[in-house]
Image 1 (cartoon, rainbow, N blue to C red):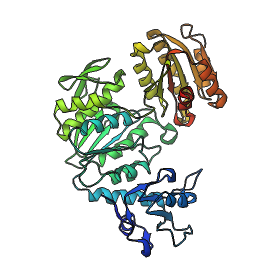
Image 2 (image 1 turned 45 degrees about the vertical axis):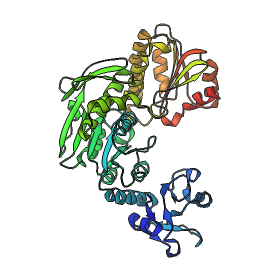
Image 3 (image 1 turned 135 degrees about the vertical axis):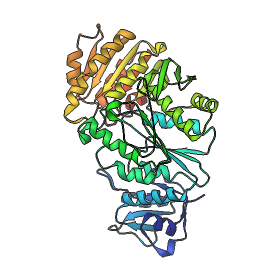
Image 4 (image 1 turned 90 degrees about the vertical axis):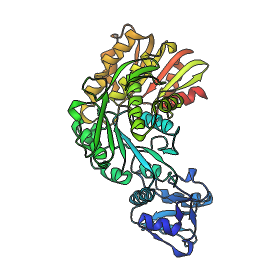
Length: 449
């Protein structure tokens, strides 16, 4: 099934279409000319370091049915196009219109400081055992990614599992309205994007906007944090390790957990992996799945790249968790690695946790206790810290971690990448964890090459 003709898509997006090309059929939407395929509508987006309008001809050369461009851009009459004042806003309007047209689709929206993508991957794998299911690709969770996720769905699809992320106040409302979720999951309130929010209370307030968008017949599933409990217009279920949770994670160990009245096999290490699986179980039960089907889905689930993904380079296991970073996700990763006894000895590479605002120095130094703990639980050969914010932590840790050497570099430049590759052990494991801006996956790519 297609999205419709170019003229129909223009109406849904609130734009204007050139009449001579209005009958052209649009199959899908693309925002990257390099990934545009036959029949796509290429949406030209302006960013701080690029302008999609410069790549219109490339997209057409790859078979695009047409392009969506800003009204102030000159466009040859030979190129089928839709004009709009703001292409990002029009993309959102198009997605909201498309969402309303899919009456049989149930939407699950997932947000939180950490665990969004993993929970999304798990739930999509579980739901696919019973229903036609689509999910956000990779981490498509912002003002561009959310509409692209919605626009993947087609008539006949039954469940959409969408990830939603925000960096500052005011971003959630249009995304929540666009998704109009039937069920929402909040994985965790933590210290993410404090540069934009200021404090955890503001993080919670913004995340709760998504939960409040669920209608009175819907369901909200929330990690139990008494200081951040939301007020929602529908049923609310909390989960967690704390006794105050509606559904308690009773026990867990490597590869298993007790939750919701039964034992579960899970492929995710650490307490955060178990809690992500718990949220998935509650959501699937609410949607109408039987426990045996849920268990089969959990067993078959895989996670997105750079979410503690494993790759082998000779006898070395590279643990790539480099997609993004904040204090809660670093602790979750270290806890998970501490349970992987088969990957010792371990070299740990930690990069700056970006966008933490005025609290950044303290939050980085607070990781010392976590590093001390993991060094007592598994054999750590060396710790490599990179970034300006990691300098104070490196100073605090020097000589204090049971003899484990701590190295520091201010920049994750090519010289640093080469240095880490040279230092990488021949066996055991290498953990990569840092914020997106450091692109620590380059270390894995260089080793694999």
